[in-house]
Amino acid sequence: MFVGEEKILKLFANCILVKGKRRSIICDIFRARYQPIPNALFFILKKYPNYSVAEIKDRFSSENSDTIDEYFNLLIDQEYVFLTTREEATAFPELDLSYDSPSTITNCIIDIDRYSTHDFRKISNELSLLHTYHIQLRFFSEIMLDAITQIVSEMDKAEFNLHLILPYHPSYTKQATEKLSTVGTVSSVKFYNTPSKMINKYKELRKFNIEFFEANVANEKCCGKIGLPYFRMNMEHFAESQHHNSCLNRKISIDKLGNIKNCPSMKTSYGNIANSTLTAVLKRKEFKRYWNVTKDKIKVCQDCEFRYICTDCRAYTEEPSDMYSKPLKCGYNPYSGQWEEWSINPLKTKAIKYYDF
Amino acid sequence: MMEYYPFKKKELKYLPINYRFFERLKLDKKSAVIMKMVSADNVFMTKEKLVDNFYKPISRCL
Image 1 (cartoon, each protein chain N blue to C red):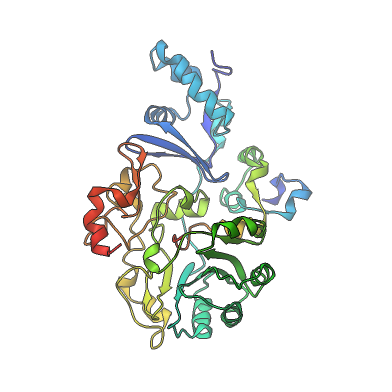
Image 2 (cartoon, rainbow over the protein chains, first blue to last red):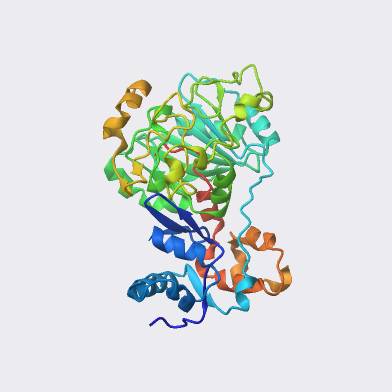
């Protein structure tokens, strides 16, 4: 027997159902979490949104009653749903998931190696005109902290959030590293290629948004990973994913040679920053061809329950010639509900060879 | 809208991540119920956390 059977069971507006082929999830976009549920429960919650618990149970045979109780108790305990009266039930409108942004470009990747000759002041002025907030600088070669400080000072716009990714070097002291996060508009610093013993030593720097990783980021080919650590369960991402590509929408990139691209990992270049402008590139219709490729249009992803909280990749796909093919570096199978290591999947061998991983 | 703003003063030092949500609802007295229900502590995030929690990963190489 379920307490409050006469009451209406309602999902909180921020807890949104997403159906997958094998199972579904309730995605809580305020608390940044999700709950996998069986498709049968998805069906109940979707089909009977304004029914009382008793009315829902009446629609199923009595042998299902305990199971329904168990499901509902779990959702109440976890605060995905609440009970309300029939009179109040209509007072809870659904969330508006339309998406827009004041920024023409919301985020930008700039790759840098020892041969790069980017004019950071020029790039910075252009990105400012486009109202870009988040800029990631990825360094593929060792660089002295003074040189980074110089680059950051050339990109000193109040509205920017600079995110740095650079290789660890033993000469970086704890104090100098900590200082780096306070320079200009630096928001986060991530060091790769860090010896494991140093990761623990510098753990406390996480409070300054400084993190150390063992993994190597040798070049742009290291990008495009898809998995649980990259899931984002927030309203902006969820809303944007409904209408646009969750990686490339309003993104612009400059690769290490200065080529302007959707993403540094992609082949197509729309000009070089040395003799072209970001604004001119944005006027080209073909630059935006991926912006509206939603997960609902992508093969396999369209059947996945995680499609609005993961981040897509159009640079590396299972079928390189098909712009609607599943991301290569995703190891999730929505038809079995299982994760596996993508790089050893025999079905991906051809694409792995094509991209020369 | 502020008329229905249910948060305590001490919480205002944090930026409510769902502020836009409230704004979008064009609140009336009835929907103010929702605000009470979602005003749990973890709805709030410090400014630092917000930066870290950029709404989509810029790249995914680490």
